[in-house]
Image 1: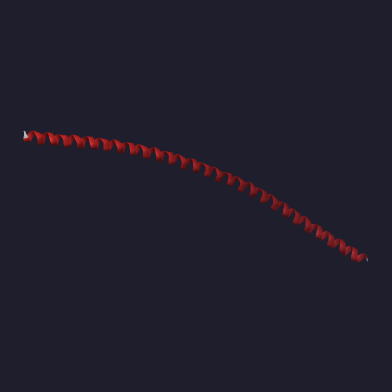
Image 2: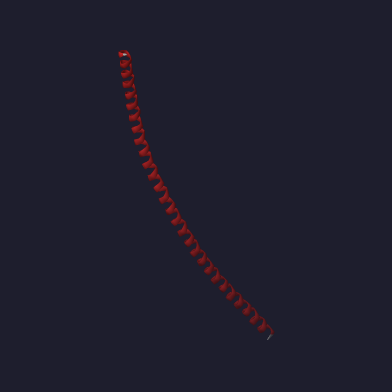
Amino acid sequence: MNDLNILIGIVGVIVGLSINYSNYRKKQDKNIKSETKEEASESSEIKTSLAYISKGVDDIRIDIKANERRVSELSERVTRVEESTKSAHHRLNEYIAVKEGEV
């Protein structure tokens, strides 16, 4: 009878350990699934943020190209105005020289 009580105690401990281990594994699986969902959510937020930043950078590039074109156009206009001013100044000098010669 004593041996039977020991055997029943050992079997009870083994069954208890197996149930505890099974519950431990289930909780671990739930934690892993929960962490995976959280990581997926964070990953999607990061991707959305990166897409938004990328679009902003593209918009800035477009604005910079437009500004470069405007600066180039203004540079050409300034060059033409300088040439015209130089020509007008030269004509005024000739006119003044002719007027001084008449006086």
